[in-house]
Length: 319
Ligand SMILES: [Mn+2]
Image (cartoon, rainbow, N blue to C red; front, side):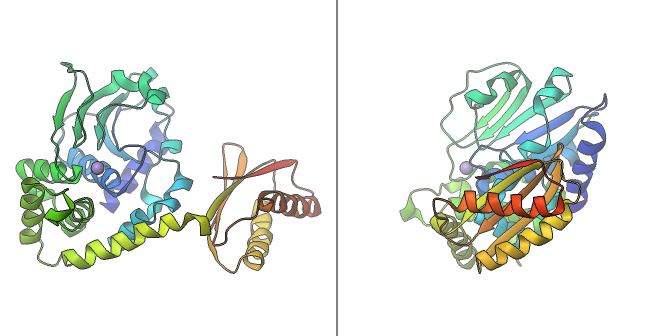
């Protein structure tokens, strides 16, 4: 999986702007919950191993990269299967419209069956749907639709893989799929009203092929707890700072990082990188922000920037 994902990132870097092979993008829904993330990753992986032709299959998470932090169950699962979040591709890292204009885009929707109105112009690129939500899509000859109301879309992806190409399953792929099914089906408890016979069938199929998968109950509990962490959002806020024309952004990073550690004993996350001609600084504070936290941070950034005579302007806003 790592090799596949780093290949995807490389291909996007090298090929996205120029004429080149097309991309078959597997896109989850905008909630980007565990199910959507897992289905995008595993189904794109399946396509890359099985599909004929020139197109490069790649999974795309339907959120901005900075938003992954807010999906703490996703982050937890990635850590559990030893996949670095840096290997993933996010919506703000690939221009789907440019690819579509160049006739180089094919889309498979997983865990949703219609595009949101903001993306409706991409509809012409949709060739396939795999989903477990209520079918809202008009039938069309150019799009293959698999929609079944099971507990987890990952059940349908597991079914596809086991039927068509079981040899591509390894411990990591199996654990991703298994985690999504167990989480969505509320630990396979019939009383929760989510699990269907098909979910149980494919969870059991994964268990029998991979006896060393984590025990179901413990897996559910840890993922559920991690998910609960995000609802503690009032205690955590992600900020993003965009600055332009900084020459020595790494010095700013050092200074700001120190300041933030002082300001908040719990700086959860800090990332600073140049992108599209501006410096982006994303960080997550483990405090409930005051109404003027943004302004305070902004003036701190200005102050450091002035000291280094490097910045022209900047803005701070919660993500
Ligand atoms: Mn789902």
